[in-house]
Length: 424
Image (tube, rainbow, N blue to C red; front, side, top):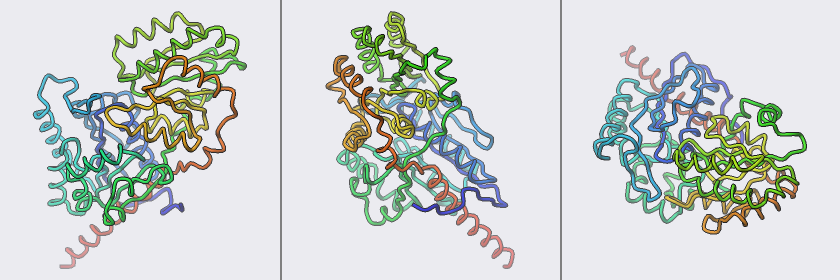
């Protein structure tokens, strides 16, 4: 797909974007939205971005000049899918009201030229509705963009939710663009989720998001970990880690059962537990790992790309961010997708396994023996870089281009209106 605008744009007006990040489970949403924000700031001059999120990990990320955030009280969507307050001793209704009022106050004072919303058209349990109504009534030139990852959930569940929450109508009446950071060849959500012609006309497939290469090169990481040139590195990461203990425990059990093979084949292991894994489960993993030579265990990194680039094999779940980082680097991967509370990861894993990009183990079938068998057979095979070349990783520049077009439309409309008023 051809670029729409040059990658760098200059205006005489300070453009303000307000970003709402869906943030009730894991780190994927906030990480993806921060990548987009950083790219927008590099691509569009005179830009200011206010990010609104309830992610508990916001303070762990480095923010560039031009980007700041408002931290909302945290919510949590557990394995049942039901929303709850994560930390505060308060009922869900009062916290949703508080979050809604904070978002509205931010919009009133920040007066955004464009609002970028992650996944949920009216926010978590409708907390964006009052803000949308205010901007439509008092700042009618504000543009609205809905960002969707490649897969939301099963078609049945997604269609039911969109009808129940009136999302189809909200998208038709409110949003100027739907930007999908994925490929229709992997999953065509326009057809799968039964978008109307009116909504389909607003959809733009942008391709997957390409991450920066990382802060450290492969040689530096291997030196820090004490990995020799003839040793292979297996990286195990369950993303945020809230439900990652089962995967890591099976891996460590497999290592313990096959210590001679790991030593003979010179296989080293690096495990990230994830910042949202419980302290008790982390301690259990640390205790297991201490008994195993060649295993390094860390809690969290905000520079996963450096470690992905260093690894010879990645074992992970199949969240959007992790798997696109792995495939971007052309790495071999074994994925055990999460199936609760939604099946988005399972659908993605099945589609990518069918395309020959990864190996998949269904979590219901996962055990240490199967994981080790898959690992040993995959390490011996040639890489899959030829398959990776067919993937589209131009998501960031395309998102920036479409947002630039909308910002300039707003800018020229406003300038024309001001000229008309002065003339009158």
